[in-house]
Length: 153
Image (tube, rainbow, N blue to C red; front, side, top):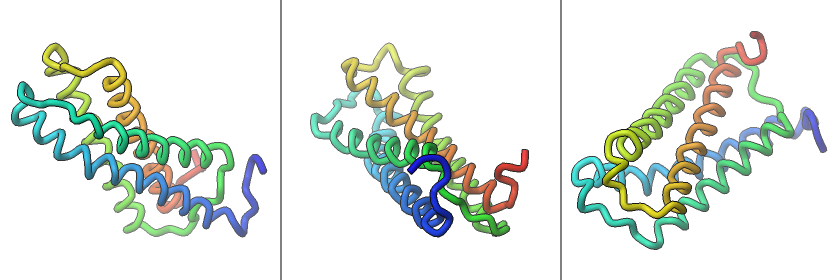
């Protein structure tokens, strides 16, 4: 099945894939916010925990798999004008982007020389940030669809 998914299953598939992406983003935020707070307040005493990579791997797999399946299949999105829901999707997209950009700033622009992470952990952080970027794009696409402007440019 490639291209456009059958209309009857398309909307359900879209929301399923969005829910899986949202689960991945929730994993990142639930585990990442406490780490971010600790890094922002006491960067010098941060020590990476060995088990922390697993939630990162799970989150990246959930978001990336769902995102690229949606890109490939292009299931139908909601087309009705739901301005309030569109605003909520835009708001969550902006919050997601703020978390990703502030994390990037603290880790790579402000304190990189003090960062004591191995190369594979740095790659994981970049994969997590890229995944949040993809999630943000998806929420923005949903918001445009809910506003009734997706595909009209």
